[in-house]
Image (cartoon, rainbow, N blue to C red; front, side, top):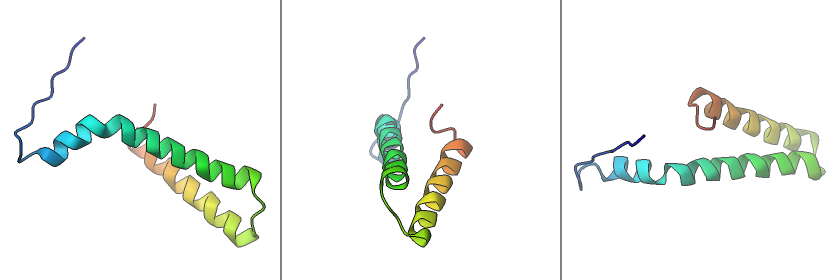
Length: 71
């Protein structure tokens, strides 16, 4: 299977960059999720601090699920 994307440059440069670098962005989101996981699993956090990291990770995962970022 083959897919071809066409962009009118320079007018659609933002869209082009998003398409070309999408995998890199998905990798960065995964790394951020793993960083949050590490904070929660391996560091001693105060109650409020731990809750903040939990909330941040939950919100990140909501965005991933809603936008089907990672399958």
